[in-house]
Image (cartoon, rainbow, N blue to C red; front, top):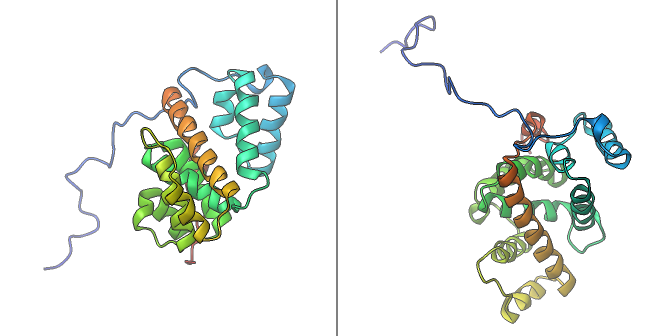
Length: 213
């Protein structure tokens, strides 16, 4: 059978026609840069100069400056501070936990960071969908297994779990960092849900190689 002519009109409506698109970073509104305290405006402008846009999480938290400062301070300590975990491993924790919590903002934004820092967009996308079936090293699988446990109801780490991490060369401080990142983003995921926070469109394309690994 010959394929239908390319000029033939489809009987179907355009994909996703009529969908409501949420443009606001937060349902509670966001201040303009001019309305922000000087230190917060400086962070937003510095970030825009570096990556080309201001992440919506910055705008959303700027609504409450003290919350912005506390959130960003602990975020930067966990994600950029000294640790036995690499920055890519920490981003992988965020993506895995956020996917389990169904947080659109964090999966999308930190998925972009993981593609860039991990230099493996394929595995980054696998983790964003289901880390359990992703192509992971034994170390990274152990990290994400423990991180996933942190947001379980009634979570309490067992000696066996900590011993399993140590068997792969992960220290008590590393276990602390895994739990801290997972727990912090459990909080962040839920606040993003409260605010109906939406990812900046730029995140979707970041870190995607056109020619494979």
